[in-house]
Length: 144
Image (tube, rainbow, N blue to C red; front, side, top):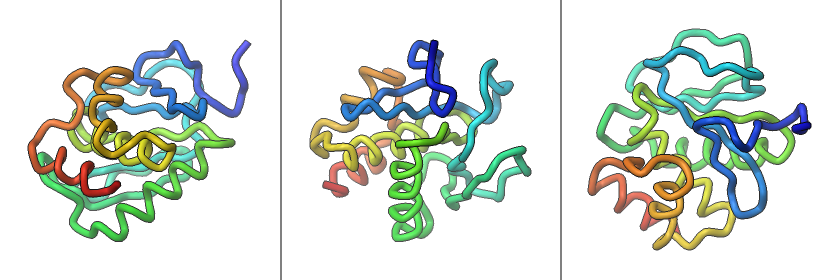
């Protein structure tokens, strides 16, 4: 039986960080996955997201680009990482790969993955197409 405060580690889109923390990444253009709802969501979009039935935070982040406010994004990454110790945290953009993968790589760095390995870690454990653009890869590399 899985812990009711976290994700099922075998569920699609769930990334296990080296510390054991679990995060769910997804694309908002797809239906909500089955299973428990998030306790907290971090949404990475160029426009404010719709309202959800759980607490959420929006980072203004246009598709295929970088966060509009990098300090706000860094604060949001720290909040999501901190909350993932005891809550079900999801990160999502429209497609669930570029911005979501980039944010998951940032959280992997917070969890101890070297910045030079974070993109490969997310691609190996979340989605092989995560972190879509060269500038997203450079953004992750510079977080270390």
